[in-house]
Length: 427
Image (tube, rainbow, N blue to C red; front, side, top):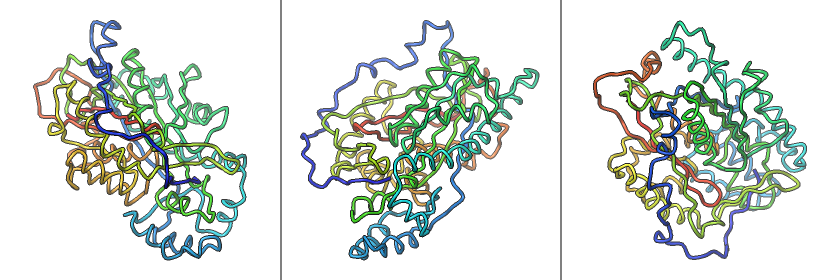
């Protein structure tokens, strides 16, 4: 993904006081659906699956290759320092940017050629990850109701496809409907150009859908292939971007459960979603399309926008649920880069341990845009020692005795700058 990191951006003065209390925070989103049924409905995370392209590159190797490119050799020492400061060890890329062939492609390819390559790599990766998510959700569904006879493919009535690194029409979602054997009357929602926060938007769409249609399930797929948009020119801004972005895919199956019933052990419910567009930060993150690919532009002020903006937005949202940051047990913070995580930590007074999953995903995969936050959520919800039993995750919401549960908050950042997230509970 070619980029320009703004160094002398003219921008309006931003302060936390400019973050106003949105009317949507006055009442939980769930209230808007009270008229649908006499029973309130909570969305549930039935499964999360993640995957990456097979090609793995080590950050140290990438630094040496990029530092020795003819157009960038004069910046060699600085480039290696930039790569070393990312706290990234490895990344997975669909296009092997360390090969001579890929480097030549990145310097010459048109947007048309890049989108053709995007489709070539996107479909098999998205299918592989979606099948994993569906298989896990199907196991849960069959265990909870072994006599229903319904397959997970028939239970999915909505597919949400998320990406900011490629676009084609008919979209990837239409191809997945065929390859996955989903219903032909399925509802489709493509979400593009929402950047790193797009997964949160996709989950909100899916959550609203199952609240209105609690007998149905939704499939959300986030797929990002930054490598197909790579451009290596005599531009340090591109170097910075290409030192952090990786390729990846995540898929989530969303179901529903009655709120009046206690949450069964192992169940994960989405309590509410939030979205806030921070004033006077328009230059923070911008996406665009050039003749040679999709572009990303990050302002040098972005870390400050995040540090100043996150706390008031998070606190106001939590207050609407009679919570404070101290009540949050699980913090799923978008692993957008070292400065992003560090500024969130300083703003919310979070320890390294509280955001350990975010640092670990950044170390192993880099920033995979929308998919990254779902990799972090998977670590929190389905990879911990407390969740070694898949059978526990398959239980339906059912009447049970009150039990200790964990409260979590997940959020990412979109062009705008927008802060998008969700409040969840893990029994």
